[in-house]
Image 1 (cartoon, rainbow, N blue to C red):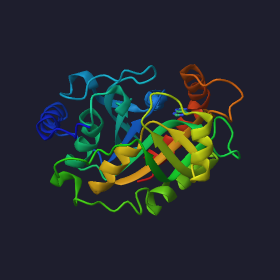
Image 2 (image 1 turned 60 degrees about the vertical axis):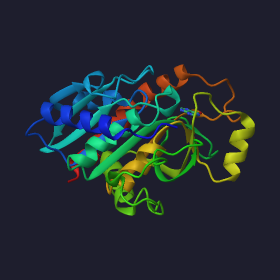
Image 3 (image 1 turned 90 degrees about the vertical axis):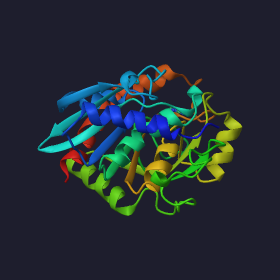
Image 4 (image 1 turned 45 degrees about the vertical axis):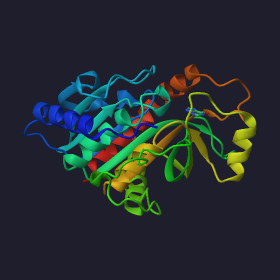
Length: 275
Ligand code: HPA
């Protein structure tokens, strides 16, 4: 599908740099479904609506606010992308690549990706948070297909340590200091927008999936390729199809997200505070 468009990425970057001239942060967080509220306890320095950033556009999903905020906590500054664009929205890779491009071009060293996911691992409970240790790309596409662009590193990026040990340790340290317990496992990404069939979930479980969702993997690939330290946290908003006793719905996802918000807020605050 349509690779990230270099000129649009640059236009977005020019607008970003004009808006945030003189402002700087080395950390960034991309908030998945419903997680935009994690910034409610942070000092907001400046915001920019996604819709004003050329090529980014507004997320078409309930629970995704569509705003970039530069925030501060205990002297640590962080870019918070409240909401994300998804491949299933059908606009190609450019809107998904823009936040990563902005990070890569403006000195971000650590990126934390959050998402909502269906639990595949039977040892997990709804509301659990999981450190992503690795991923499985079942989207049937990849944001790096197409003409090679230097910003994304080598033509054939190595993904052996996409979610590196340092990033995972940092999340574990933050979780201890926030008194939040964590699971860990492999995140399996599908293209969506349909939830999976029970047969698919059974198959992916045998392939090593602990959780399944429709995001994060493209951003992780791009950011890792661009040399940014990537970490990921999934919230188990439901059991995956065939494991869940009832049909899946976005309402269940947003309900669990709301209930889990205090835990996620505490974890992200602790993550931001660790320099
Ligand atoms: N499957 C895919 N994506 C999801 C799920 C799920 O069960 N829950 C939240 N996002």
